[in-house]
Image (cartoon, rainbow, N blue to C red):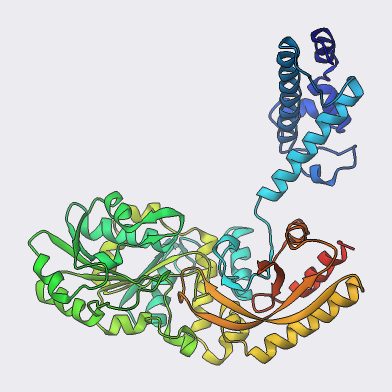
Length: 500
């Protein structure tokens, strides 16, 4: 049993921060103390690749955290010894403590790597996977993103005149061509677009909404909360499952600023249901001089053809009379994260001049990528599949998906050998991201089984470089091929080879 005197000796054996940094090869630690942590990085003399490139002040913090945990372990042991209980120590002696603390530093470094944004292979079968960043960008959009982000760009300058211009000028030219609206702007997501519209057109006044449309979006954000934050007064009408146009008209008064309809894009309500149509709400708003605003969520376009199934299309909603329409950039459009507002110029102008518009404006890189993605939709619709990854995943024929699955299964089987089994099985992919709720796409997946449990296989693939994210279904580990991008199959094979 460890006594208190022995524990006191172990306290004295704990290494200093400087000694630990020396073991990590931080010959420039004095520069870090001077606040020049960005000038050099730690050279990892212990051979741990996870520390490569880590800023010195961050490594110093990890060392201090490791020492704090060592002291905490000793304090726990001292308390136990004082109470006559067994006291176990994680290490004994100076060298053992150095090894123990540096092992904790390596764990902190691994946690840092795991926690930072990095590219992953999406083999889940969920096309718009919110946790994995939703829509992958088209190549031309990515090029524009990098060009805008790696140097200076003409964000707010008209190069012809040399004068300042609005950063939204190109988008405001493109959105009418895309949707047929009089005008349009973009902000950093659809929730921001809704908030901005409410703030600009209805702050301090009433907004009428059906109870069926008081939805909750991702991250526990609820429409009533957004309305309250925007400073508008919510007026609920109808019942959860049935709301008629007369319910709206009965509540219109002198303080009514807006009629709002929210498309329930992440759920479906079936059975004994009824709701007022876009045409009815637009006509009612026109009758009383109240603008009608419809949030479509994902925002299907006519250019998508039959890929959107029964989703309302932006152009159809505008033709039906909606004054303002909101939809998402990073869902079916396949662009970067953005909330797009289109509609009558008078309302869009008023919205764009609201102070909140500056708070929720897009940065230069997102604007550049959004502009290029919209341009793709203005070209030949037949080329969309080849140029927009989201459209390709939605429209790829099952026979092509199956051919890719067979090729991947064969490559994996060859790489892994007889101890593993890689077979192609039917799968059902999902659009995801709050789009086309309940709609599935026929797909094919590679089922992998071998010496590892499905949970351990899934964990190890998530630790690969790049991480590979599949799915576990009925105790089977699956790699759905519909969501794989060009080159992902090579990354999967390399990751699996590391498991042999």
